[in-house]
Length: 415
Image (tube, rainbow, N blue to C red; front, side, top):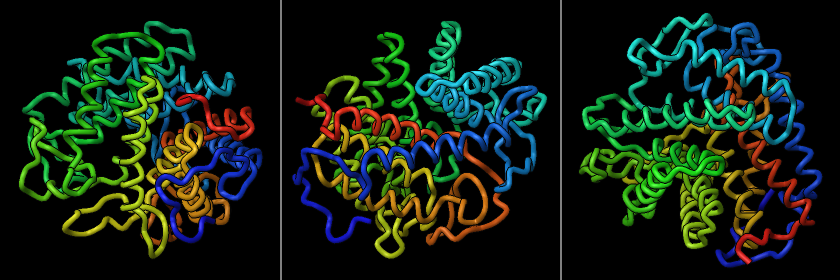
């Protein structure tokens, strides 16, 4: 594990034959095993409805199905995960799961007004009202655009774009009045960093598959929102919540930083900078990613805090997805730059995650999704994720494949 002080910001290394104290091939094997020997078999035997289609994520550690609700968020997310698996690693079984999910959602997922609902039962009967945050539409659009490539289905791509604009319309409604649940204060039409974040990664992927000037404009708008409007120059951190006009109100949201979303967003901006071949944007995202990583680290027990109030308290729980966003972001920087600090943080984070989150030491497959500050094991958990964890494993596995092909040399992107 990384020890001592963090390297200077400008310290460099020209070749990465080893990462986290492991040869690239050995690190790749760890990622391969975590994905294909753990995640994939679990969802083939637990939580997926092969008869009717769709993901049922209320699953205990031993694979017992606790209920059969099908949350729209997890349908869109699972659709993306298994479409991406098929597109990059093959396997007809992944395309089968994606197709069954897509068919189920398209058939059952809208109410009589055409709005995407928040949840359904196993048979597709609506159990939750129309989504009023816009996230259900974004996750579904993200899944549909990836499925469109997997299945060669232009209609699914058309639907993905339509659904994206449906979600964006909800977000842009100044009368949208919904309690976000994780921000200190909510108000009508509130802007949140999380929505801009999902927009960025969705459009980054979609625009690699289809050219669309309106979507390009929305991407540029989202980048401007994140790097300028949500950025708080006093704290040098991103606020999570602004009012509808992107103003920072003098209330509890003013110093609220959702560190997890900020870290996740800035690695997504790294991806977008690569697509645009925009070095200035890439460097800005790298600098701000580093800033949020440093602030989020728990110097007492290790790992990253999820949220904080700059003039108040930290949210002390540790969630797996945040730790994995750090691993994605630092891997991107190790692949495309010779900077040394990302390798130091990856080393520190990778060993912390491998020590704290896998359930294999407790006799179960999969990983702990979240816990207290010490990540104390709690038996009988009630939900399994089908998105953040496999996304981390897939993206970093692909990056390691490219790095191994170059014998550890930095990519030529910026040369």
